[in-house]
Length: 158
Image (cartoon, rainbow, N blue to C red):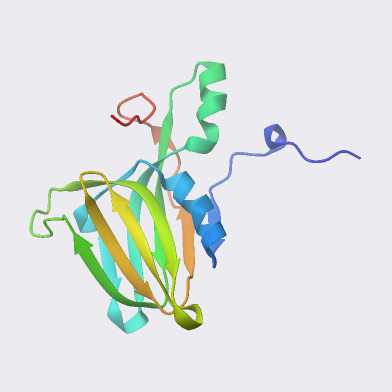
């Protein structure tokens, strides 16, 4: 018997949960360069839930696509944070419904007794800060992959 290899896995939708900073780092890496309309973020105060519907680049299949000469893909994914006490935004015009935001990174700064601050860092100096009672994040793909409209790997100017 041998260990499982990445190449042996089936293409299945991602379903990940993060309840600590290390787990959130994995989700952040998979969501780097995800894009979403400003209208696809919501806070349900009664349930203390913040959700984003994102179009994420499929980083986990980038190398396989390059080797096979196949086009790059994106997939719609739902990112949900539970136990959200407050949400603040910076550098985002929430009155412009046609705005498309690009997610660069997600970080977690722990506070006292399990509380903390989740920061979603956006391109163009924007940010979304979530004050959480406890870190509880979930990411899941909700559509089949589709061809990335640009056909290219996301890049950043330094």
